[in-house]
Length: 189
Image 1: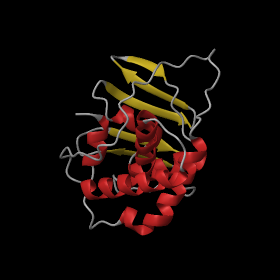
Image 2 (image 1 turned 90 degrees about the vertical axis):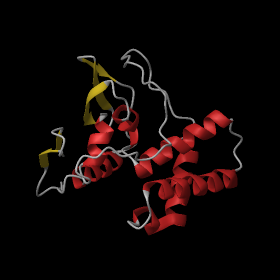
Image 3 (image 1 turned 120 degrees about the vertical axis):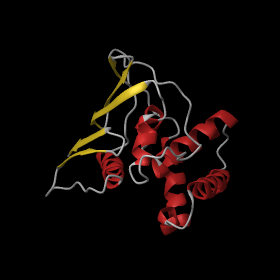
Image 4 (image 1 turned 135 degrees about the horizontal axis):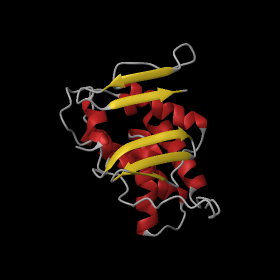
């Protein structure tokens, strides 16, 4: 069972569920400190598309009456409309990447989503917005994954700890909890 399944199962007695099917299948490469940070050429279109998505969908993104598949479908449709309205020439692969990354941010856990879906990864450690490690086959590897901002990382942390019925803020800056399957969630802000 992947870490993502365990996180999702926290609210459902650890029954594995499919969260959303729009996760990027890209394999993360090991961190190379000598490599210069690569700027995301799509950062502006992603930001505009995500802002437009929130403006169009608003509270429907958090509507508990919508099933996961329904919400996924709705988000993908709206994102397609938003990206079409941008009139930026994109290849099908670029378009799919943008949609997947925005869906990961809006519906999932952002930069760590692909790691949580990987059954070979046994631990994900986020030390800061740009310091993310994974454990695969008993080895810790620093990744090139990063969150856009501290606020974005904080939203993801809050999403994770809320799944175990906890909260994290300045008055309670640490959460150490167990998911129903025994997995550990530890967060400190």
